[in-house]
Length: 185
Image 1 (cartoon, one colour):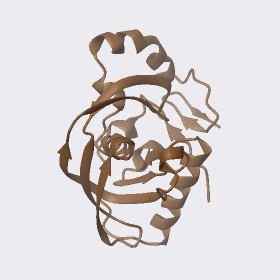
Image 2 (cartoon, rainbow, N blue to C red):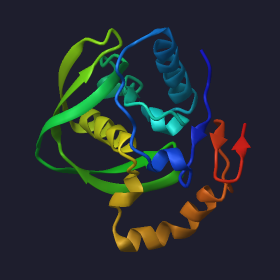
Image 3 (cartoon, rainbow, N blue to C red):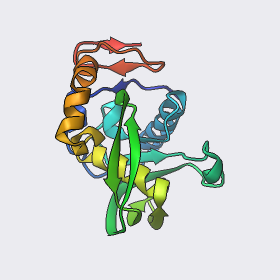
Image 4 (cartoon, rainbow, N blue to C red):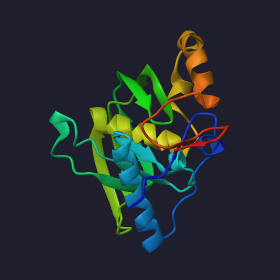
């Protein structure tokens, strides 16, 4: 498995819509394993293919590092699609593509999502609370949306300098990144 560089805010793949996956092959399975390795090395709990520069509708999730979710096994969602939403919940979010920036975001509290698993079998998942939030956050990536897009104008203004630094590559991370300026390993 390989650790892939994570694309930071300002790079083109983060603002593009990912394309559906039509089949699973060895290369796609290896890519999914690389996504897990990348997410874990960056201490993330979710990662979308756009974040590593690949415009495929694939996300990986692993919230088992959190005490109350230790029984939730890591999984990949291929071609995920939310078919229903319920309730509202506001929580602080961050993103590996926007390091050290956090903000309060309102999202549905409960979702039903259809997707294909790594065997390309159709699955349906009912997710609540943090799990729903992680899936929705990563699904946004697949549609070219970042969590900072949901921030209020005043919060965006407050974070403007930090976001500009990220977009200009003036950021330190413990994981390899691609910025608008260069690749930082």
